[in-house]
Image: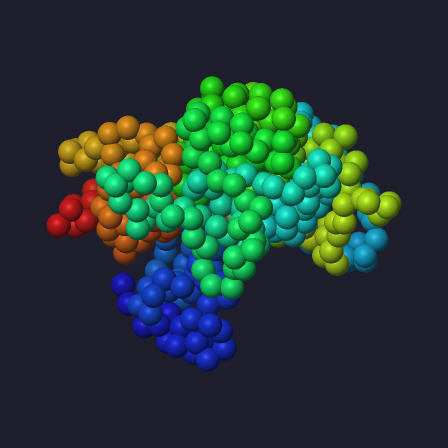
Length: 436
Ligand SMILES: Cc1ncc(COP(=O)(O)O)c(C=O)c1O
């Protein structure tokens, strides 16, 4: 398939934007950077006319399908009567919160945001305001957005595990002040010693532990229930808030997110992505007592923003949550995810490739290894290079996904149109070429 037009578009864009893209993660190199012409259902068409079945779904927000008429119509109706924003409250604010509360029993009160990053920032500030402590702990391999303190990671890619040393902790890139590292601790998922040490050495200085129990940024590697239970106990014992980041998993892996699946609840939760089927909406919320730290009284936690709870975002969330609550969309998504896994498992098995699927059917990771990795360090032992070659071949043959096994496969309701026999044929061909 020709990519001539997209390569030309990239050269032109490079006059206007660094690397020719609107955000770093969209740059896939001079030859492969994708420009999209149109999207509908589970399909994308690029500017050279190639059509893809999309399992990337914009990094997860599309839960129903692109241009879902039910959601789009609700937005059009709302903005043609109420406008886009006024800088005042509307009845829609509480309607959306009531829907969230209907699905998530851990939530008493909510504040809105425009992106996952902003929701996490608001939640962490709330945790700090409530506990009057500054330190925050995060879990290796999780991602919580693009603000300085959350932009530190373990350098697993350049780590030699045979040396018996921990991987280095490095910033995601330039411009991250070293001082932003000072208040952040890092622990390993599913490592009890790492968890106990964190609390033993500094539990009384921690405001919160932030984590994705199903790591949507590490191939859906998931917390073991016992480890999570111990984390919950320690948080309660030390007066530390448990902040569950459900920006990717929320309203996707189950109606009530990862917390419903585990039956274990955080004090604060962040939401975004699936909440609005692609419209830019996010939120954080939690227990009444904790959320009451937010407000314009003396010492209250500051939260706000010009576009907060704008009516484009909230009308989309209102309708999306209504559909997820009152239809079988979630069950459909789970069934399709399982069927896609079954197809891929047949393809891998036929080729003699060791493989495992991690996480729930609506957001699953594929790892070429014998056992599901238990944390980010284990991911390093998987054959991520083979995955990368396989993924690029899938893309060449009309299946869109992120060519990195740390990004899960996302399923939307519109994938019910998918021809599974076609997928099997394409995956077989892609794997054969990837294996060389
Ligand atoms: C778990 C998690 N938290 C926060 C974010 C940041 O969200 P956003 O990109 O909307 O700022 C992401 C983004 O992928 C995420 O996956």
